[in-house]
Image 1 (cartoon, rainbow, N blue to C red):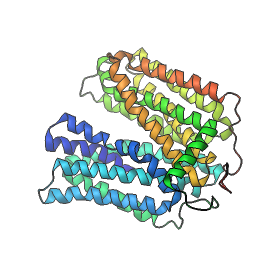
Image 2: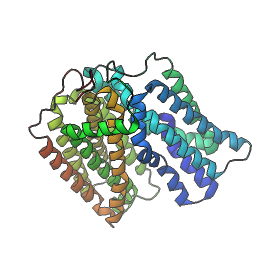
Image 3: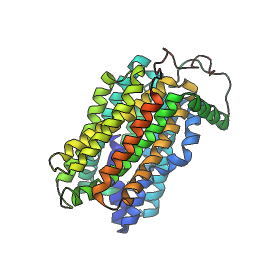
Image 4: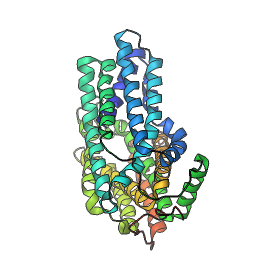
Length: 391
């Protein structure tokens, strides 16, 4: 996580150093998302049909070796921007498959009554990495240069693969259906499962609305801070504002195990989305000292909604479908963020960004409340269909 977060800073700096093009610099950041949208429907079934441990280790090693090619090429003065983009795209492809396997690995290692705690811990670690990684990336860029800084990213992936090798498991729960369905059959079964499990379907749709709001707020946080709060373009308070995002996510991860229970989802999901809507509306006040607090509170609600959706899907879905269903949910949510950024860009004035996010989140909260009202979201001790694979 830390290596990936560092590379989010390192890669754009490297591309800008090589080309001086703002357009190409922005494009390299988007490469992390695009492969997920195209390959997620394949990666989920592949992870559900095979050995998830090997897939995770293979993905980590692939990303590590790809990152290592950049400092090697730089050492021979042969680095080109084309190589940087190829590495970024292929690394993102490897991530799609290893990430799909992780969705199934966590519930296979952790008892159901401890899954909320595990996911809360992972969310907290991710939040810390999102803060520490870019800082570390900036230090590495300043000391050894962007092209050599990726050697650190490479080392983190190799280290992660080595740690995975110490776990004697294929990251699968016992039981499951006999046979090995094709990827198309696997995907069809997963889609039928989502359609029939209305709570899972609702949480995926909520995830999309949540992601649209993320795109609106975070995509235009800098223009909003300059045009509305009166920050300078190089204002140090921008760092504080972005740090609020990490702080809110960290607190959500720490509190999640105490807040989550399957039976509370019908109330907790609309409440977390409504909280984010309220905090987004608070940004309309444009009070400078309140802005970092409101951004942190907004991020808290956003991360809480995300972790609720992931945890419930993992608990509700049988092992032979869990990677496919969760990857499908991530794909839909990922599509919401660029849409949100486009919505934010189209509102013309930065002052209306928080109003747009508030409207999206309010509609999402109301929809979640209506869809989940009166629904029993409690689960049995084992996921439906886990023993026989039936539905």
